[in-house]
Image 1 (cartoon, rainbow, N blue to C red):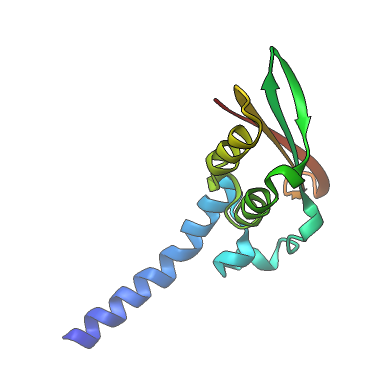
Image 2: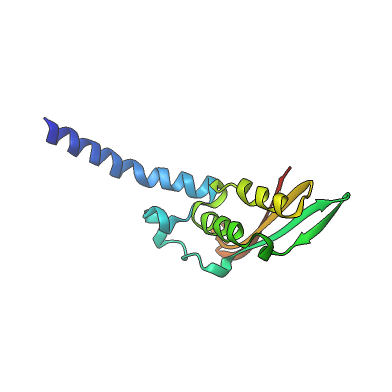
Length: 133
């Protein structure tokens, strides 16, 4: 009886895992190579240079660029998680480090990444602006 339940649970998992990974990839941009899904064979592996950050802080009413060196450890951590988890990776920790390092009012993280667009089969540059107060 226990073997039958274990086999059934494994069968259900194997049947549902591809659907779950497709949802995670489509909705949040999670790396298919990290999920070990069937989608990894249809997507190029993400490289280190595919993801770039532009950091800026608001001081005195205007936005000023911030060098990544000021928050190097947190920026590297966010890049690593963003490359793997896509939009599920939160910029909160990086933004808090930016605010602490500069005593600014607000922090802005612009994420730029190169990806393969499935609808056009072209490589595109996407941008996402994340603001934290």
